[in-house]
Length: 253
Image 1 (cartoon, one colour):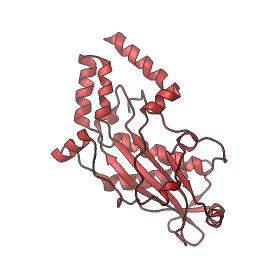
Image 2: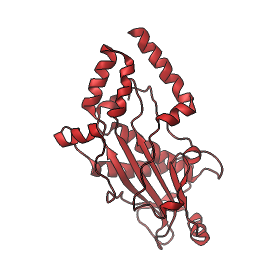
Image 3: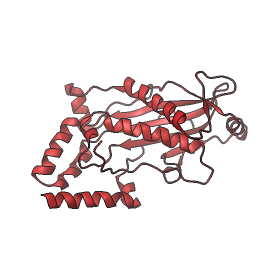
Image 4: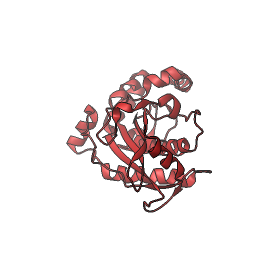
C-alpha cells in the first residue's frame, strides 16, 4: 500500500507540469449571467489572462476614459445572480442540513480578498478608495455559482483510498464543489463598464487535504487566487501572460 501511495504522489507531482492534463482537469466555464454585459462579445482568455472569459468595451471613448483613472472602489459583492446548488452531493448535504449555504459570508470574504490583494501588492496600478467618486473606477463582483464541497463524501473517499486503492481518489470528482464569479470594472460616474471577466473554479484534485473536509475550504483558496490574479492582471503589460491556478495540489491545507 505504501508503494502505491508513493506512485500516486509521484504522478500528482508530475501532472501539474503537464499543461494538457491540467487543462483537462480544470473546471469548464459556466453560462454567463445577465450581470455580464454584451456576452456575445466575450472572448476566451484562460491561456493569456487566467480568467476564462473577458470583455473589453468596443467604445474607444469609454475605454480611454477608464484607462486614465487610477483610483478603484471595490463594491460589495452581489448575490442577485446566484444560481441554485446544482451538484448532486452538494445538493444532498445542503438539503439534509449537514452543510449550510453560506453565500453571504462567501460574498463578504470575496470582497475582502480583492481588497487585500491590492493592499499587499508591491506595485499596485490602482489606489483603493472607500467610496466611489467622479475620478474613480468601481469593481463590481457577482457570485454566479456556489456549490459547497461535500465533507461526508470526501471522508468516504479518503477511507477508501487507504482501504482499497489510492485510485479511488478520482471519485472525488463527484464530491467536488465549485465557485463561479463575474466581475466588471466601470466608471463610477457614468457606470459604463470598460472591462469584464468571468471564471469558474472547482476543488483541486488532492490526495490528503484539510480543505476537502470543509464546505468552503477550497472556495476560500479560489477567492484568494482570483484576487491576486486580478490585481496582477491590472499591472501586467499588454501581451504578457497572467498565470492561472493549477487544478492539482499536494499541499495538505
